[in-house]
Amino acid sequence: MSTSPGSPSPDARPIWARPEPGTRRARFSREQIAATALAIADAEGFEAVSMRRIAAELGAGTMSLYRYINGKDDLVALMDDALMAESLIPDGELPADWRAALTLIARQTRAALLRHPWAVVSLQGRDAAGQDGSFGPNGLRHFEQSLAALDSAPLDTAAKLELLTIVDDYVMGAVLRSGEMQGRSGADPQYAAAIMEFISGQLATGAFPRISALSQDPAAAGLADPDLVRARFERGLALLIEHAAGVLG
Image (tube, rainbow, N blue to C red; front, top):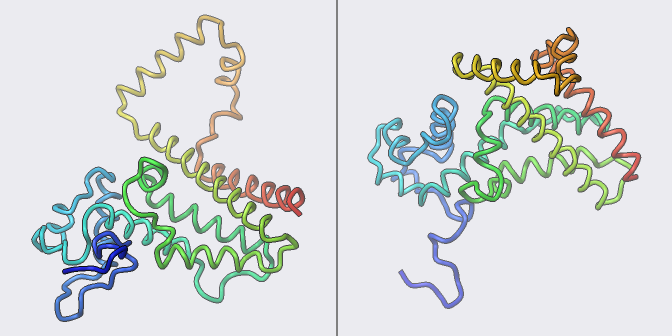
């Protein structure tokens, strides 16, 4: 099929700019494909997601998936946008107060990412494969909702955008930290024991008196407790929004 000079090839366009197969040809929707990919990643890690594996889960031939998506980049974009859908506040439930609204969106985004702890590393950043899901339908809805949350905030446009970025950074950092804690708690027992033996040996040298004292302090024992982690996130978020609004306003 020929294209006019300067126009992009259909295969080069973002998946969002390409129509889905007609209903007569389609056995699956993009939502089904994304949901299958998320389920595989949740159960076995992002590395297990492949066109072949998704086709097998859907009971289809691998090549038949290429009628719906061009490859792994499209697949990652669909997964990213599906995660954005989980971050949305249902219609009519966004609080009128801008601080409460922004807090609710941050809380919802954190909860969505914690359900898929692999996503922050695998779907974000320079080395992540795929087209940016933030430009997908649900990504745009999420951004629109975030802007709507700040409608009544006494901030100019630049300050609102900066505040949204600061809060997003905070949420991403909190999720990464939670993922690290989960990784430690789920480590191989022999490996975990070896780490503790190494740390004990280092503390015994006397070179780390503050860490040694902290290891004996009951206040440090429950830092990874889920309830304390959640409470710490809420306190930090409230302080961040209040302080940032004062600085940016």
